[in-house]
Amino acid sequence: MSGPRLAAMAWRNLWRNRRRTVLTLISISFGLFLAILMTAMQDRSFADMIDTAARLGGGHVTLQHPEYLDTPTLTRTVTDAPALITTAQADPGVRKAVPRITGQIMLATAGESYGAFFVAYDPTQEDDTTLSFLGGVTQGELFEAADGPGIVLGTRLARNLGLEMGDKVVYTLMDREGEIVGGLARLSGVVDTGSPATDGGLCLLPIDALRRTLSYGPGEATQVAVFLTDARASGRVAERLGDTIGADTASLTWQQVQPDLSGFIAMKVGGARFMELVTLILVAASIFNTLFVSVMERMREFGIMRAIGFSPGQLFRLIMWESFWLALVGCVMGGLITLGPYHKLASTGIDVSAMSGGQSMDVAGVGMAPILQVGIFPENLAIILLSVVLATLLSGVYPAWKAGRVVPIETIRLQ
Image (cartoon, rainbow, N blue to C red; front, top):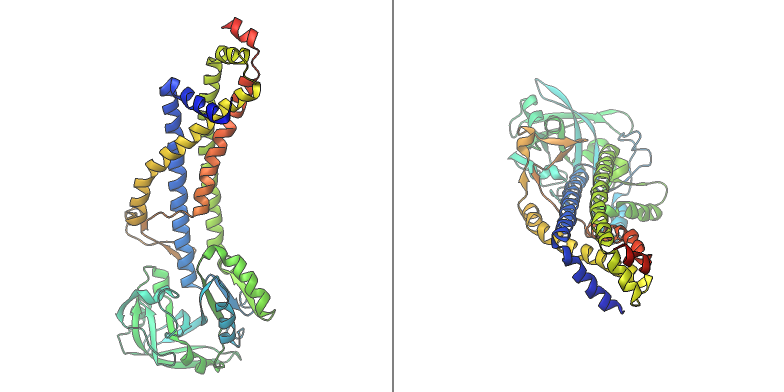
């Protein structure tokens, strides 16, 4: 019997016991529903966290002095940031590259002094798509010139220093020679990131003004932050840039720069994969039970089929076709069931801020979005669908083998 006719016979066989088939299809579709939504939540939340971390730190790939990661001091710099930016932006995976100076700073007014972490950036090159702090201005405004006198502080830091808009603040730090240097700035803006720790220790400065204070060259910086169109390509891009820029500059991925966040994501991904595997095993067990019981109930039928000329291979393929139909219909049903909730969660999401009592949630210093949304990577969706199909087909192998081994005279007599 030809393949199409076996496929048609297998389709009819499935519906001889509608209740059992429907229950099996519900099992497949529900497992698919859970797997897709769990993976989509994970993909979206981790992608957002990585993007936020990149915009808080040194980008998806960071170009810096080879020793800066272990000993981050202002003496370890890259001297020709414009050349590195040109090289980085020539890579097809790079969206943007910008120079930065980062480090520790002391801020003082007439009555108070506090330490802070500073980021000096070029306001003509950056916005909140590369430096997320810039989107959180609640008072005043950002400085517009790279060599201006402005300074932007976190809300708690400005309040602790007792500063109002336009007030003067003195900053001091160590220069490249290890000497204490300082400068004078006026508070031009205040940012609220939602993280108490960040708001209590954040300082933003114009990069050229700080270069003068530190006696840096015009193209000198502590890092070049490289932003990618796809964060998952950070390893490949970092390797390509590392091969191009030479050994005097390190090309690091966000995983290397932020190992705590990388470890957290790896742990969560591993846990999710384990849960998906358990779900897949449960679904496969349900399918195996359906097919095996179906085969055992039809042993006399298979014996007659063997007696009239069906080969063991044809019976094997018949059961495998039944497995395939279960997989196909189950995937279609699962997709239809998932479509509505997925669209709702992708477009609107669910506000989960109440779960934290209205407090901001962060991991390794990176804030988590209060709105839970989904967005699955195409390759992960393909892996899920392929896994369900393979699990269904594998569940049918033993029942199909059992059906192909029937001895006509024995099964007909026993039944």
